[in-house]
Image (spheres, helix red, strand yellow):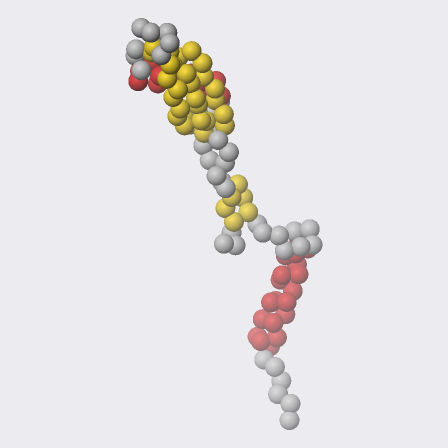
Length: 109
């Protein structure tokens, strides 16, 4: 004697098979990971060369990482920090390079 399968069981199995197929269709036909780029502050590594005010043959390299919206803002903030932290030196050159974003968040970790 055959047993009839309960309707709830058949419905659950049908959804388990059909749902991933429908999801794959919306994602271009493959099971891609759904990830997003984390909004991170714009960070800059700024390097500079200081020259002593009293002896022109004395130089000092300095570096820092700053959070600023633009390269110009990072250089301006760095110059202000250099004047404050090294009052006996003059900033004779500086360079700002954007720090790459740290990573991605994935919802399937």
